[in-house]
Length: 352
Ligand code: PLP
Image (tube, rainbow, N blue to C red; front, side, top):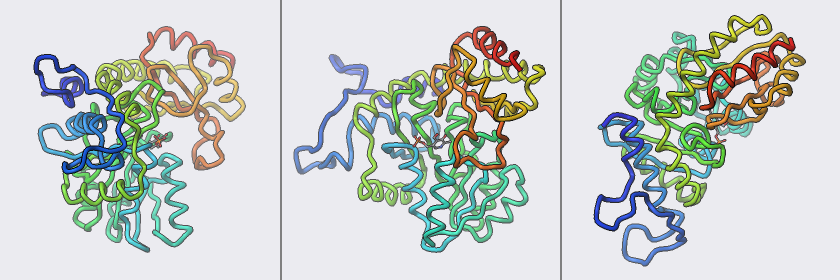
């Protein structure tokens, strides 16, 4: 099966008479004893359906295991918990703020040492891998839109004995499969494209390493950051249309990137050439704040990857890296008609 078909078909009940086409929402804190399920913090059939579908998308024909979590941040926490006391994590200087904040917190408590890198400088990242226990990549990065050479970095990290993790939230498995590029783990904020409708907070990780899966499942059981059955069902329902949504968002984002490049109010456009995310840089915070207040379709909101187009001036957050321009606005392009999106955006840009 190809990705769009996997997205629709994996994780469904067997094709048997009277079986529903969709997995039911199993509301259960406990199961009759004696089987594999036992308790609602360890497993849930609705999670399992979602996990099978996402694993199949990230890994193709190679067997892989997925674990779903209460949020992307919970999945990130469980992975970072793999790092031994005082060991080094190599991470992007411009990753999602939650990841950067969490690493800074762990470092301030002496738990890990962090080595922040420019992930576009492959030579520098490869050199940093030598003393790392874990190499964290996000590609494209949020919100700088930088792209890493995942295959080269993963090969170097593995040779150094480090785990390689790729946050694949922006690219989605439709456009990038990091496990095929040598990563040990893929992590998602399923809140974004995977669920796709701005109505769920959820996270997930995927790995082909059965032993690593066992360790991480054990951490999830103990730390307890599990998703709700209803959220899992919604995320799976969203996942069914992932390929279509990504295709439309990407086509519109590419078009908007071209048009923004030609607009005199825009100093710089950062579009990696794929995906539905781009960032535009206006001269300063004042112009960017005016832009996000002046549209009717585009909504000023954090988060991304929903069917509706949203945008955000990222430096409104105190935690955002100061190397991100104050006038940078990150655009999450939804599935509306691109001409309506441009009419609304360009009218606001015309205000200067
Ligand atoms: N990774 C990326 C790239 C994100 O953008 C986010 C949230 O914005 C996260 C991880 C964290 O996910 P969540 O908000 O679902 O906890």
